[in-house]
Amino acid sequence: MTEQAADLIILEPIKLPVSIAELGEGPCWDHFTGSLYWVDIPAGRVHRIDSSGDHSFWNVGWPPGAVVPRAHGGLVVAAGVGFVTLDPDTGAVAPLASADPGNRNVRMNDGACDRAGRFYAGTMAYDESPGKGTLYRLEPDHSVTALIGGVGISNGIGWSPDDRLMYYIDSLEYRVDVFDYDLATGEMSQRRPFVSLGSGDVMPDGLAVDSEGSVWVAVWGGGVIQRYSADGRLTGVVRLPAAHVTSCAFGGPGLDQLYITTAAGPGRSAGALFTCAAGVTGLPAYPYQG
Ligand code: ZN
Image 1 (cartoon, rainbow, N blue to C red):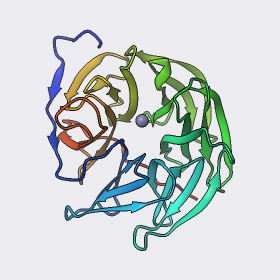
Image 2: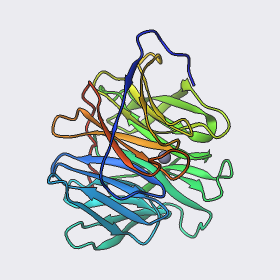
Image 3: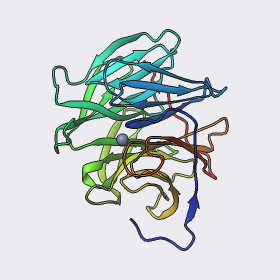
């Protein structure tokens, strides 16, 4: 863990009364419907809590790594080695695009859309062997572009409030990296370390960016979310009663709640979904524009 600053803010989350996931991941707030979506990867399920608190889930047939709302309605899920659509009204699942057809050794992991509606998601090897993953982009025309090869565990993706920076985590590198980003073209350039954290079984996983430009990083094996200012200083911690903290997303009507997913493992609430008042608003999840 990084050394604590004197003014470090410590937040305590509450556990939500929904099903326990084996590997909860990919929280995503859909502000059109006031719903939170997330996935349980090995269970093959997309989950939702709607604005009335009702919990639903759908089996998608492939391991889902990330789910985003679609501007035309419904959802797009990075699942298996590609992307599928999911209609939450009917449960219908349909293939949309394949990223790595025929590759049975990898699966889609974390993903997110930029403000222009391009869906970024990357793969990892089932056995977590290094260098087998790739970061892909599902373009609005449904074509898929391979962007970065040789990835270990492709994970958290997010953008600064002005869209001029893109954050990206390859967990096996024990770093959050940052690129210069061109929203008009989707060009990523000048990859460099933003923060380094973890070692051994403790590694950065998912991330979320707030309206001040701070980056909230889920620390797998560390039982915490760590908040880093835009200049890379540790300024806040959310402590979870689960070691395997996987990801986080801002949600709620005011986008000021941080939703946190966890996985099975050490901790009395491993696999539960949590929320806490973040004390700051987050950036919204952008829908896929294709
Ligand atoms: Zn992850």
